[in-house]
Length: 138
Image (cartoon, rainbow, N blue to C red; front, top):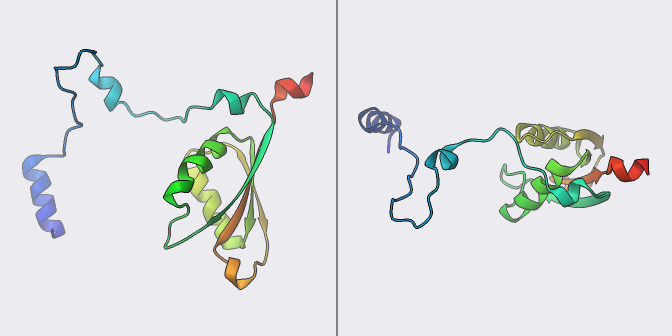
């Protein structure tokens, strides 16, 4: 559909409304809860109360930083980490740092540029760290 037609469609019919639940449910849910947008990412209690490290290797393919099957694990780790180290080609690790920051990752992100072999130019090693300060103080 050409852009002009799409704009005309939106102008006539407006933006789509969020889907409302039907009234036939045995349980009542406030639709406003479903429509609410959150500005934070919930933390995992187990990961927050444990000392851990994790390492993954990701490859940027066709402009995508993560494969679909990597997204959940990567962001679960990133949002629960205190520190992340990105290892790879300088320009690429800068892109990954920006990508994480865009997605509300608050961990300290350090970059370690290297000169990878040609077949690894699109790969980034990501190291995630978390230290439970309560266990550290004991």
